[in-house]
Length: 442
Ligand SMILES: [Zn+2]
Ligand SMILES: [Zn+2]
Image 1 (cartoon, rainbow, N blue to C red):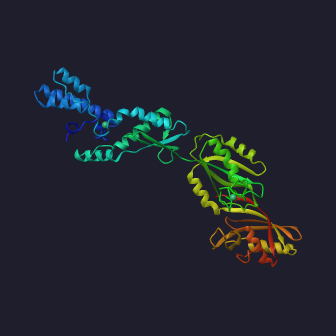
Image 2 (image 1 turned 90 degrees about the vertical axis):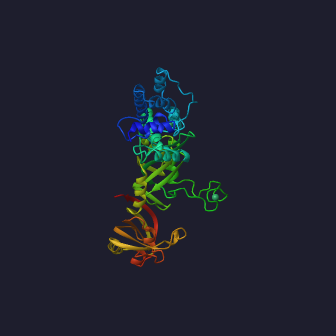
Image 3 (image 1 turned 135 degrees about the vertical axis):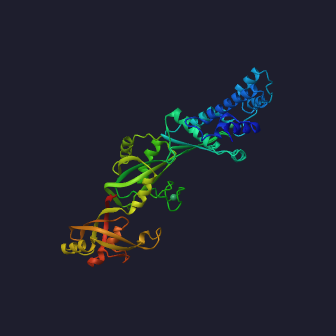
């Protein structure tokens, strides 16, 4: 069917605004909006009807009346008036498909804009939510008129709102990882804002031996606060997580933070060298354009002598995933060992020889058995170097696969770690101080 015939058939049945008529022909013609398509169709139909009338075809006036009412067309009304024909006095109908919602478009766009006015963002996405009845009505309409060049009403609303917001703000539409997503219902005018998290990556060094990596809830009250924890709800007053997160959370004016790190050291182990990679995820940040250099300084001043951060940079969720995978990346440790009996240089060379390039079979250590499944892991040691410190003391440096429990490599953990230092020398060995020297990301 000719598209003008199709358009007038639609209008004869239902009132349609320019957007809703044009949308049924959205795939025809480039670089124009549905509103202009609808308008063009109505104007063409007005000319055609006028020509019909001139040729004494009664269809002419009949069509002009349809256009004047169901097409909301002033041009058709004026033409009828010029032809001295009666203009149908029907109460202004509303558009069958959109309930005249496209007429309220400017207000809706402003509402979307206001909803994100308090947030900093560079990219956004507009999602549209419609009452089920509206979408069903359009589906039935399309089926009845065999619409094959059309766009959906949801798509048109989303596209137009996205375009308008981009024009007004200079921000860009982003489908995969937008900073903010706005969900709009053009019918109820309800607007919901989803603010996506902000990710900041960095490295931390832990310079003292009594701070856990993450906030550790009190085992008696599980965070509520009790006598045992002095009402704090925590086992330790401070953690790397808290020391690092607080200034970031405050600067971003976010809701909360999550701390993701590549593995963790024991509470009594220091984290030295270039530090351990981590990512802080800040939920619902109002501010995203943070001065990370300044924040590094703020964290380091606040945590002076305890924790030190470096290499702050913005990152994304993918990096968190990679960080978690990289938990078993190579690590370098230094451990001070005390032996029950004196050790000789020969003993120490033997340790280097037997432990370098060796796979260690390690059953879950007794000390963590209460929170970890009991199973045997195999971890590879690349290199071991041992230096004598005194008669019964030595310092051992180990470069190994992440996840090896170094204290148990020394003690043997009642035979649960094999081989181990105690067993190799037949001399009971005890780890005194442990430091992580390096976390090597590939
Ligand atoms: Zn409409
Ligand atoms: Zn408590």
